[in-house]
Length: 240
Image 1 (cartoon, rainbow, N blue to C red):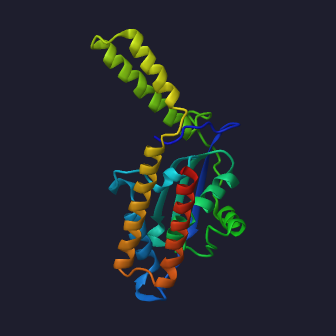
Image 2 (cartoon, rainbow, N blue to C red):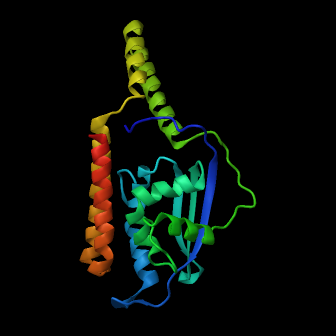
Image 3 (cartoon, rainbow, N blue to C red):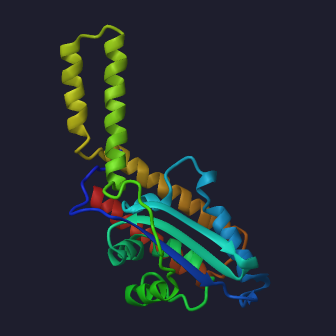
């Protein structure tokens, strides 16, 4: 289980909706392939529904929900997200940890400057944002980290109840429960390492699949791959 640390001060859930025009026509390095068709392959390949492990969006603790959809007959790309906190820190997390993933997607859209160039990236996002006239949040003070904590806490209590029903010694069970709750605030380094390996393996396989399909010229895919490896090396160094 990943580290369960509080996000403070607090915690308003917000929405981000972008509608960005997709480049029309054919990819210059691959003249038989349209931008929109390559984008569709990228989105299909990163679908969470095809994976049993963690999503790459789990690298960003503030994300409640994220969705990309090609709309308007292939002319525009819709991105919808719910997140905790302010917009620019949220985008900074993406810029630092997910530039490679955003580049794979939004490089197919007009004017995209690359997520690693933070100020131009923020300006591009704000240019294409659609403001919500009304936004409903059922639990405005609840963060993603809170949800992980409550799920883990619930699992601890369910295990306690199961063992108590089976006739376990209540005193020893309470002591075990207290130790389990105390561990929730700690870092499970083995689980964290397993989480990062799962992310890395999934992304490397997806990138290799794109390379095997010859959907990207080396000059396009190599910077993305290099950025991803740098991010993973940094994250693994932080946890070691």
